[in-house]
Length: 179
Image (tube, rainbow, N blue to C red; front, side, top):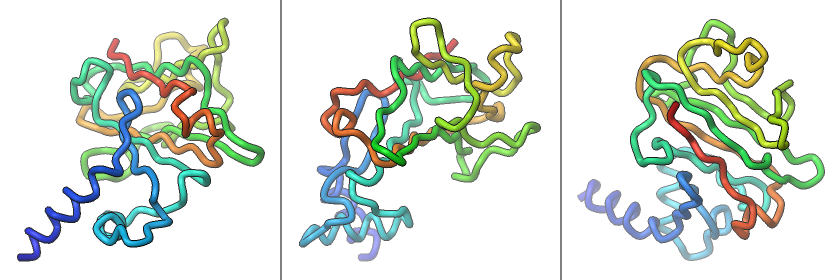
């Protein structure tokens, strides 16, 4: 009976899942559930914070742009045509997690890339974050490296105080490109 109830919560709540490119996120009415009890239960069961989308969104993905699962045996670029637009005091970050949902231990103790990091932008103003198990050959890209292990992983993009262009899908989510 408990499993049936859990499955119903998930099924009822999937209507609130938004797909933005390769990324998925929980949308409205998160944190303002009203009578959407199944959605509230699913979020509580998942143990994630429930900020309203005007405060923060948490897109995640387990696939590259071709739909293949992310695997640290490969190297990837997360390509941002432009970084996430945020309001005053807002910020963004990209974090990699292992299959166990924990941060991936690595030799440089780097667990995310964010707008506070010293990253190298491309000449056109775009940004490439390197997600791979080994340091980049191009040493000028070391600050853009998000280390992973040679294993399955998933990514979370957190955007705090997202600009309305993010919420209206006028800003393009980054693509994850297998190298």
